[in-house]
Length: 215
Image 1 (cartoon, one colour):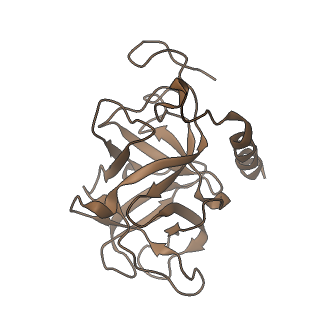
Image 2 (cartoon, rainbow, N blue to C red):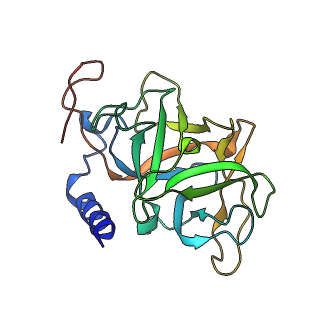
């Protein structure tokens, strides 16, 4: 109940705390933000739900959905450890982060299991209340020093060196129409992601300063 309440609170804040895209505060994607991630090639958002894979690891499935208003597409951006990503601090290109699914408390995860449709590497959601293991870390690959709001970035898995990818395969029952999310070793047009709707925690000072929000 507590976790569900926190999720609802965060989603409620989305309506009142999201900065205007044209403002300086909205320039960077920051630690602690809760966002939806859009695959720019296939125009679907990274999604998870309490549906387990019927093969492979049997862990919670991760998919892509077309809807922009699905509450199961929110992810909280955290550091590889809780001490290396202070709330409101812009995320650096090359920084390792975790992505925690807001509604279920599980982390975006991959490992050496085959994905069910494409036979690439399975991507799942793993852990409890935001705590999983070393295979929850992803490196942000972007074009400058910091992850800018308008940038499309790649997410490369720290442990297995695959990129978070969608190539278009669709599931049938019970998640008909949702796309398979998997890991691929090649960097290509199918593994670009952009931060979209969400709660973007604002930095308290300019990037590069030693000060940051502690909200």
